[in-house]
Amino acid sequence: MSIRNLPSPKLFSVFLVFSVFLIRFPGLVLPAVVTLESMEIFKTHEWIPNAKPIVYFRCKEENKTVLPDVKKAHVLYSFKGEESWQPLTELSSKKCKRCGFYEEDSFKSDDVYEEWEFCPSDFSGPDGKYIRFKDKEFNATFLCPKCVPFANASSSASSSHGGGKRINVALIILISVVVSTVLSFGVVGVYKYWQKKKREQDQARFLKLFEDGDDIEDELGLGM
Ligand SMILES: *[C@@H]1O[C@H](CO)[C@@H](O)[C@H](O)[C@H]1NC(C)=O
Ligand SMILES: *[C@@H]1O[C@H](CO)[C@@H](O)[C@H](O)[C@H]1NC(C)=O
Image 1 (cartoon, helix red, strand yellow):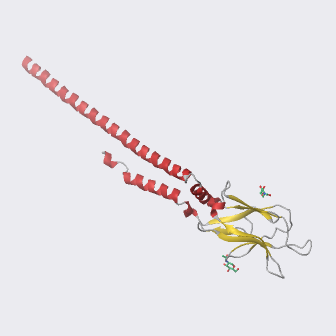
Image 2 (cartoon, helix red, strand yellow):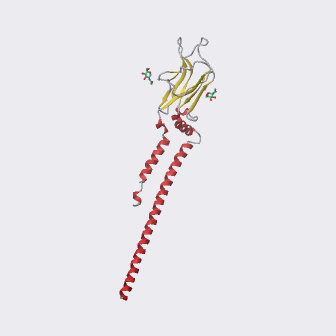
Image 3 (tube, helix red, strand yellow):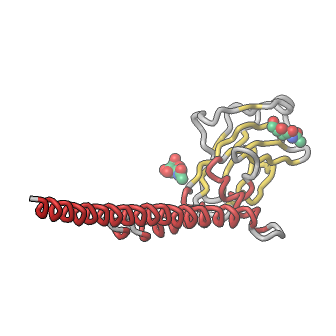
């Protein structure tokens, strides 16, 4: 076996390119579903006291998602993320969507709690949490675990230290791959060299033995 029979450096390069690719483009894991974890409204827009509001979430050009449980102000409603009306929406690219919470109104156009730009990069809390709070209107917690790489990527890219974290990770992987490749080649090389030396020594000793044997034979021949 020669050094050429080792796993080729090509394999290492493919692995390297693949890992760098994953780090550079975490968006490949999208589309990511967004669920509502909790919701509290601070008021209803109903005219009639104690009337039950119909609160819904909607992103532009998508269907309404009515929140069937949210009926009272100042009550914190918690959800598992598995309710029949979940998930709220999907984020399929880095682009933001225009979404909002509204309340159905049968006499005039629906009341707006708030309409805002809903962005993958907002899910920067632990486990992809995003809290949206509007004074006197609502407090909602969204979850999107798959958005986390996006949030991290964009927050590190936008930080003044210039994308430090992601580059560091890529650099560490690169260095470890290079170091381990060099190291394994080195170890194999040293081992091969040692084997070759040993074989040569053995051969030399063997030949020497033969020569010695000849000498003995000669001596014996002389003796006879
Ligand atoms: C929106 O609702 C309509 C009718 O219920 C349905 O056919 C359509 O697939 C829905 N679209 C989405 C994006 O869920
Ligand atoms: C909004 O709700 C979250 C989750 O229940 C809570 O941690 C947070 O303190 C609330 N924020 C406000 C301003 O009420």
